[in-house]
Length: 340
Image (tube, rainbow, N blue to C red; front, side, top):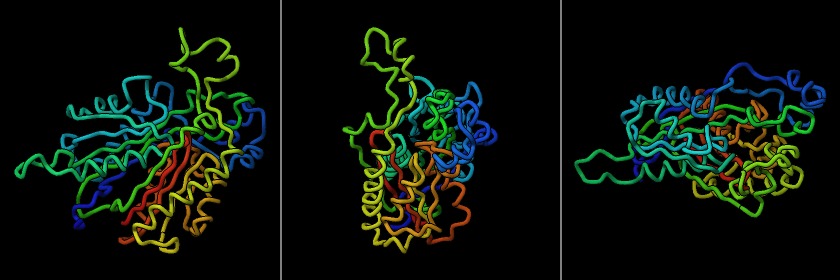
């Protein structure tokens, strides 16, 4: 495929809402100390959305910045793909809300639910759509420009009490977006791989409200037990995630002909920063060239990878090789290779 026919990230934007929420601010409600929170989670701060904000609100600013960076008008978009585990409402999807807030044309707008691997899933879909030929020789490509958004608002569904300490200290809010299309500027999408293992779904999940429960989706006893809040068996998942992140990283490095030493920047994300670092180490990625988004601003699931990429992009030179890898509920995990 010629260089100008490879899908690229033509522009990136981000939105981390409000001021950072420090461990000092959380320690009291969670019944612990700031030092213990830092030690237990590897996270010092995170961001929380304002009351009334959903992921589409956060993504609106990120998408606007991405469009501006890509010199793309909203009217040029052929598709919107929104990765989120926390949509504004049960249905319709967050992509529908973002489409309306952008005043976009009546193009397709869909959500993807791959949790922490959500951006990778959305990027894979967008890259495939971008490669589709035009309907006829004289027509513009139907999907010449695709908006990939990723956003989460967890803070409105966390338990700010000692029982919720572990997940409340880890999960965070934020959004990022990228315009994907063919061109000769921006990082090329060299390879994407992602996987799901549903047999591990109840190891990291938020069970209620649940449509399988009749006649109401959440009962008083569910609420009393805190089953409406995210839960995870992080100790049991640690070795599994480490192994799967390392394997999927090799799955994208190999087809590109890259070795770990060739990677200029690795962004590896998981709710437990230590696990992400262990996975990077198993691949042979240099610690000095590895960023763990969760350690920087909490675990923003679908948005973590692209948030960190948005910060790092300005410092990367042409030819820089970047590895993205993430894992989370599903169990879903994946990786992507980008070349600037």
